[in-house]
Amino acid sequence: MAKHNCIIVADSSRARFFHEENKKLQEVAGLSHTESRTRSNSLTSDRPGRSFDSAGAGRHAMGEGGDPQSHEARVFAREVSEHLRQSQPLDHCEKIALIAPPQFLGLLRKSLDRSYLNKVACEVDKNLVTQSPDEIREYLPWGW
Image 1 (cartoon, rainbow, N blue to C red):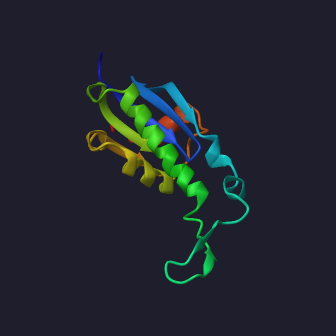
Image 2 (tube, rainbow, N blue to C red; image 1 turned 90 degrees about the horizontal axis):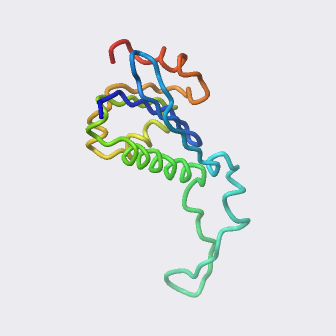
């Protein structure tokens, strides 16, 4: 199979995968993560649990352990990374471009295997997930 450039356009709830051929983007796959769109209060229970103090007989409310939407974004970034790994063998990707809002772009970087991360030649910190392939292509540098 011939090598091609791989482009991932994502936000915390949707990802689109493209191949670039002759300076045109062809969409080859997509993922969605509806849990990231759910409001934070819908992702957690009404009240935090209760626990005994580590010393003494007192009880207290337990902390919530972080923002549920941030957790779901991290989960989705790992799903996007795993999809890339399974659908695009490393020897089929010439270069990789990551396009995502700044915070999700950081999560994608952290979730990619080092071998794929080494192929990242371009990063665009914008939310373009709803844009057309031609509009997305305009944000990629010429000859990237």
